Amino acid sequence: MSNLGQIDTDFYQSNYTIDDQEQSCNDANMYGNLYGSGEQAGGQFQPTSLVPPEMLTSSHPGQVFQPAANSDYYSQSPYIDSFDEEPPLLEELGINFDHIWQKTLTVLNPMKPADGSIMNETDLTGPILFCVALGSTLLLAGKVQFGYVYGMSALGCLGIHALLNLMSSSGVSYGCVASVLGYCLLPMVILSSCAIFCSLQGILGTLTALLVVSWCSLSASKIFTSALDMEGQQLLIAYPCALLYGLFALLTVF
Image (cartoon, rainbow, N blue to C red; front, top):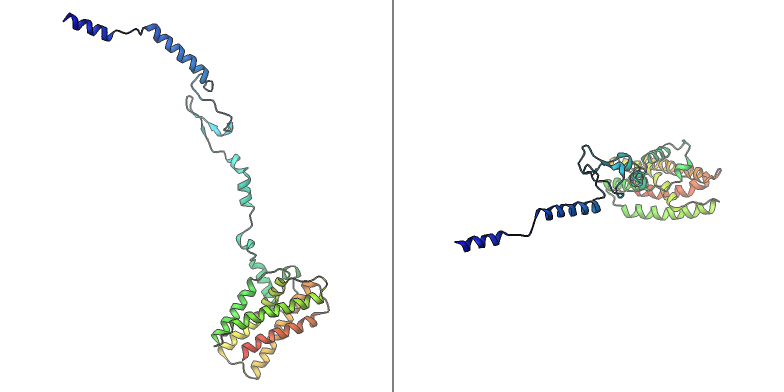
């Protein structure tokens, strides 16, 4: 039994003393002072230079600072300002319903003076819509003429474009010519709509077609005269326009 007691004593015997424990605590405090320079006396953590000081808040002592949202910081961001300054999507696509409505009213009223600044735009939204409407109304009247409508429109725009560049000193773009001729096709759409309900192959239909051709050509010549500053040449511009719209009238009547 004495041997067992000696074995237990030897097993639990250690060289670790209270002085060693105090020395380890002192060493821990020393290392804490070296690497814990970012901590305050109250245990608070000092913010680093990577985070703006105005974005750090602490409601209670002893808590770790957390980044807080700053509305002034984000309101001054250039990316947010760039999104606010972007134009609407329709304006980026070149679709302005106000200008479309003004051009339509100018075509419907040949005596109304045209605004040259608006009419000089290459807006093709209205012309494409009116070309599709003309082909659709001819289809409802039993005439499949979509190819003729598009072909004559393209060739007519090329001819009028070349003629206007020879007559005017400033010149005109092809998009502007196509836009004006397409908007002035609106009276022809009205004529083709009438052909759905009644036949135009008669004296009344012929007179109505001549009236609509004159309406379209006068509206187009008025717009070209205002946009290109070609005063006194409206009749010279109206004649080739009347020939072009006469072809559309032949498609509508016959």
